[in-house]
Image 1 (cartoon, helix red, strand yellow):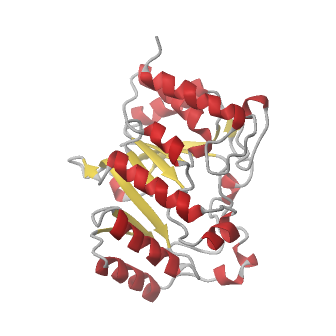
Image 2 (tube, rainbow, N blue to C red):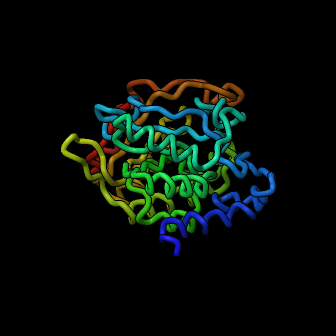
Length: 292
């Protein structure tokens, strides 16, 4: 008899035959080699896996966040700093047994958690690998590190599986999601996703080492010409989620990939702008900012 975890992995695998794992619902049969927007196939494509010490301190701690970078993405952000991973076919396809081995290796190396970067389009394969790894003793907290363009129907299946959600909130206006990421109705899907994530795991709970064990950490990247949208998303979090939610306010934007094709994206975020957004968030009553 299948365990509940194995049953979930098998159930999600059925979605690959008419892929609807994300809001795009491309409908392609990935099990037969067809590829949709994300270019993901039947096997997970891995770019790298290693302990990562550059994530939020709540994730990296002293021993690193055990990061697995998946190739491809269900968004095409014109300013993507990891565009060689997200937009091109970097990496290597591996079977689920190999992926499970990567997970076990990161645990043996002492990582605090397993950080799944851009996992949405490979969820069935990830869950199958996790099932294999858990039978071999894998037990790290799971971090779902996503651009935030998610189907709530799929996220609901992950209740009790994911420990830490790490979603981006990129836009608050439909036209921006379409123009800069080819992501229709991004604000709707993104906000519904964050609500669901928070309903599953709530506010951050930390270990004695001050490393997150559970909870939601929202990433907000400040982007030239989109600062007002970042502030709108801060208001959404304060009024609809929790004033205690952890928010990483990121100022490391630089015009990469195709950003210079859009004159409004050609600048950088200065200190005055960053401090203005932070001050606005504090005025909303938001308590827990991680400044990067």
